[in-house]
Amino acid sequence: MKINENNAGLAAEKLAANYLIAHGLKMLEKNYHCRFGEIDLIMIDNKTIVFIEVRLRTNDKFGCAANSITSIKQQKIISTAQHYLQQHGDCPCRFDAILMNKVDANHIEWIRNAFDT
Image 1 (cartoon, rainbow, N blue to C red):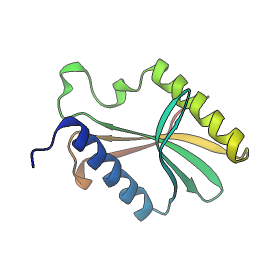
Image 2 (cartoon, helix red, strand yellow):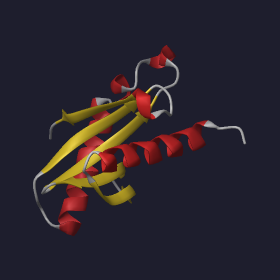
Image 3 (cartoon, one colour):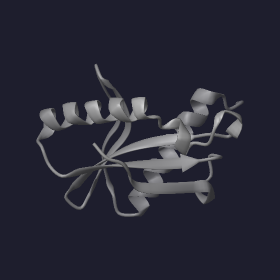
């Protein structure tokens, strides 16, 4: 089966989840949606809720994966995270990013505290 962009994105999210689990985080939600937007992964690291944006960029023609998390995208993630916390209880949180240039565990860059509220 040929991997299209959507399948590659799903594979990247699965790889990212497994990578973070191997580094001690625990999964809470995948692809959490609300009216404000979507968060790829919501995990817990000790007592901190971690909202994670997974970005796969196999071609840097339009910029690298990190640059694709614009201030508008960050605001959507923050609003979605606030919605999640209202539904599940307020607690310490942070925003991380997993960046990849190919779907391969050797090409994962994990940025903790990628942005703030």
